[in-house]
Image (cartoon, rainbow, N blue to C red; front, side, top):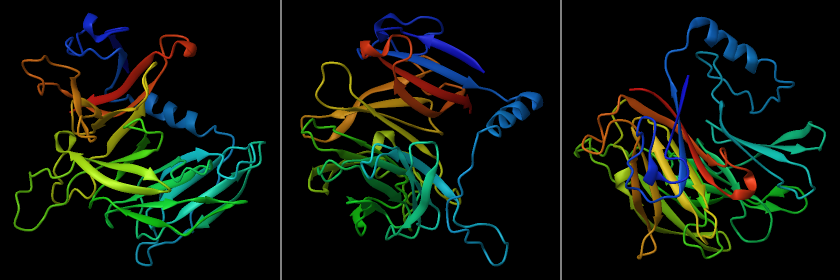
Length: 328
């Protein structure tokens, strides 16, 4: 594993391998974690470390395929929030067969449940939490890519969720991130995924990429527009690949959130901000390796990213972007 740092503080002063184009004025620090092939001993040690976790909590119904015996309810994503406002952290998982399970935290590392809640969908891939209807309670949003919707589960008193509310998105929209992208104090949603191949069309056609759903209050979302530049056409027989990585963040002094987007078939990270038309658009496209003359010459793809404070004390509010990359 190699860790490289470029452009500490501001991208205008790139260093090391010049991983980032120096023309981007974003006040961010960037780290790249490059993953090559792990040696056998390192690979084994990684999974040995994972096995020492103190407890395992069963989730899902255990539904199996009658022909193969394999489970078909596999959990795909997890999020955490204090859904019942009792002061203890809870978690929610979404599953391949459309199930949502919530574990109610007791505050001592144990959980009641997990309790099953209907999603109103046939499959789920990503799940996030946020107060989506403005009542002060954390809710759940999850993507159903084959149904082409986002399902919303609004938290209810004392401990539960209302019947699911379905928001149209797009077929194969699989990844999800909340954020107040327009700064109106109401959470919006960004949905990303590979586009569906439509019969009779060019399979390389990108229609959606990232979809911006604007929250208008009370759990209502309006389709605003999409960012095709950050997308990738769905390839036949590739199911829901590639997986996208989305991260919203707010820099000190700003009143709205920024969205960073990438996917595992890209050497770029796109930084999206609200345009004058109120729709998310590409503000910067960051090329990690190669150079500006050949931005797509990188031998690496970005698997995932996160934004947080790494190089400075948390109180500084410095935004650092960490990306995990592997050879193309």
